[in-house]
Image (cartoon, rainbow, N blue to C red; front, side, top):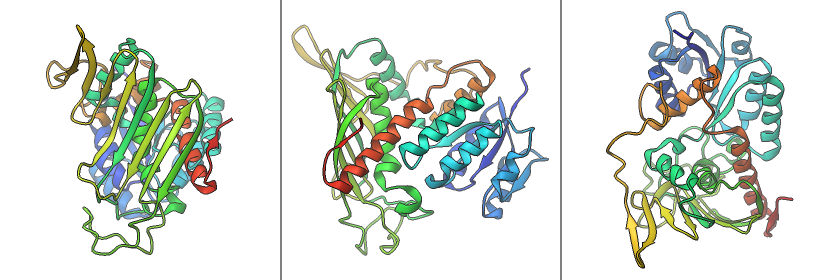
Length: 361
């Protein structure tokens, strides 16, 4: 039996408790042996719920990295800490799974890639939506050439009034932005992945701060603090790729609309198209007639990945990470791909700052 991957968790907040730590606990290939958080009570609670009997607790991640018995770390901190901690972890000889977005900007992302290359360790980013059944099936079709030349796509992550009011989500300085960098990043990642297109030419965008100052907001998680809400409440961008394909990116935490939908994509090729607006729908023509096909994704589970502790996207994400560390498989989310997502997000924000299109080269 293979030795379990010994994992240290850096950041024991919401995303750690709802996604990563439960998935790692279900993963038969890993065990969590150390927890770190600047609030010690969080790390102690994580140890009780998810750790091994002899696991350690830290408030300084650098102390955790000194433990040579730790194989890998999960970086689950606010966005402004992703680069620094990931680079330090890679330099310390640890494999890293870092939460999305990869970094605050492209320069930071490049530093992470350089540290990965120098260390020879595994680095992946937490874009778990790629592991959803609809995304897995759509990717198989895309890889087969079913859609032909994909020249138009939409990346959609729009909420009606569901602004996260905890942590530092609405703090632009610590997060780098609002819904665009929080949930829009998932939609953009899915879209580029389905298009297999990572060469942006230029982008243009408009962000809005229309609802930030409102009170009695009707927000899903209670009223936000208008004084602290410094990030945008919505952002809309248009990205042109070097081959001429275009991506329309829509993201919001708060938008007065009837049908919110999050982390989905629409792709249109010269042979067929697909969208995730009402389940996965394949749009094509058969015998001269327009046809919409809706695959039954609830039957006959396909073993895309083996060895995971479950079938949830976060379980498959965890399994591919530990498999890659063991040399048993390839990453499904590469840091190089994630760096392009970060590059485009940065370009979108720069376009907003200047009021002009932003050119990547």
